[in-house]
Length: 124
Image 1 (cartoon, rainbow, N blue to C red):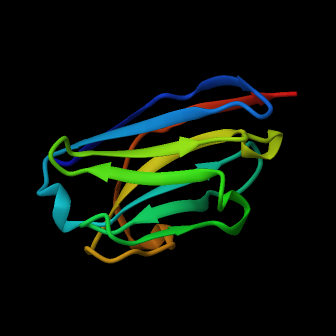
Image 2: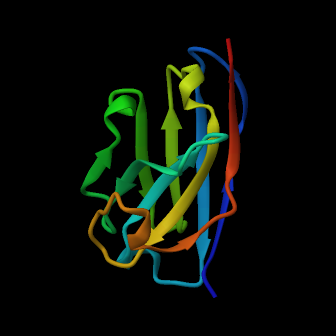
């Protein structure tokens, strides 16, 4: 049984930083790409960032490039999302997900398993 548990969300001021973590269990973690998605109230879930199984490749939503960094520690079965220079439009519930393959995908339909999410609130 694959389980993903996100943590690190919270309330932060505009321009602040947060580091999200996603702890995974139940699978050989390094064999699969991982992704972060987010969903704001009244909006569809959207891709934020993804990282390949080895961690050598990453991909970001255009609006977060240069501000967010995705990384992973396969020894700890954990993927991270460092978020800097946060903006009000970054406020959402953030979900991590395990891809079906080792290669990056930005499509939620390519994800096999999802965490329950962690809330990020950005105050102005």
